Length: 167
Image (cartoon, rainbow, N blue to C red; front, side):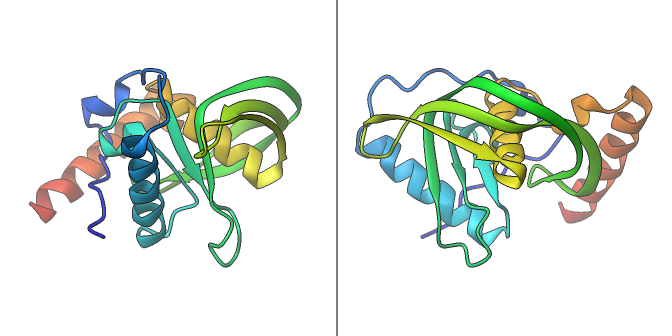
């Protein structure tokens, strides 16, 4: 399977707010599968549809050591949170940069699975952080938005320089 193109900051398409999935069909399941494959090939642990220029509320996550516990979340919604902590985050759309971000330690969420059935789940630690990070993407938000303007601009300039070198 050919991996999808992952948009990189400061691409304005990353700021698009994703629309709810209205029907879990073959197109959505196929996109989720392609997103998982893309995420694994990029050595990531999470990917939001927005990052691959598909603007629907779909994220894929796999924080397992062996990349064998994929989680597909359609229309995810956090319904409860607990605790906060600072974590160092990176992003496939902001390659090579890791910065501290405050996140909830535990979350409870509602979502729809690849089978079209709604479910609830609890997540903590790395899984909770990853889900929150990917859900931010669905709102057009990036982890650099939690940083100072000066730090964000520095990352933007460095990435633009790298992107020009690759072109």
